[in-house]
Length: 427
Image (cartoon, rainbow, N blue to C red; front, top):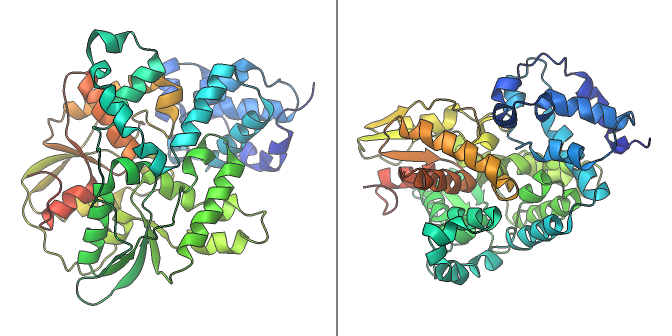
């Protein structure tokens, strides 16, 4: 039997670190839902090893085993042996996309997603179809739609037929003396569907003395492609993004989407074999910070927060808490707002089911996780739900609506912008 995962041989030292202790099992969303050993991190590592040794073929059942992984990296947080699961699952998915021919319908659907999601201008073209599809977003017609189309309609935000005036300026001057020069990633989904989050980010940073640069020519960071196994596409996006931010001398590159931040912090690894880009990628990644890291790291905040008597349920986005290890900073930002009470959520380490494109390619599993998350959040009776990733916002909103318990879900910078006297967020 040929070894379908032969290209994973350089990663065998990472596989060898797994001692199959099982600490990852209760933290793995797919294992919680499916209860199958092979749908757990240690089960998948066992299959990777079997693939390298040529003991298993790249069959549909093996591919499905890796497709059920959300890539949430909760297993990395739980692992006492320090297994780095991210490069293992990303490289395995790259092997699958290169060597395994998916069914025609699956290939078409994935191609459609990747022809739309990384391009804000194309995403904006969806606004009119979403308006026309309004009658199908609920009721009897909605229930008879195919699951993937139904999920697309459930997740889609309320259409903004015009984003005029919501595009983030290329330069937002600092209030007072300049503390740092910050580049701002405006993103794809964020730029198309949540431009107000980018505006709030720029305003909050400026209020704390940051001169904010948002290069107009920047594109996708490549995170969605990377997490789906399209590694060469991810590298192309990474090179283009690095180049767009190199034109201005910057102290820090700020990201307000957890999935994007986790990918950008790993550009040095992604482009390690490219002599022309390896050092540039490492230099770029060394300056990438989540917006909460920057705000919480400011020793003497300038901007005065007004009192907001709110019960806030904070949802940890997986690619912020697990992939980046950023947990305390968002809570510190929330605690800096007088009157805010941060509520603990049961199973806070378990993914909401968004996970890049997971909720689009595995809608049933994602919906089950979304319902589970929305239920735990609703149990806290919050005034508002706060998180740090656009996919999580859409996923939790949709799940809460489906349960008949609508929740108001905001990005953390929207709440902070309102506390600083802005016009966005809750009142």
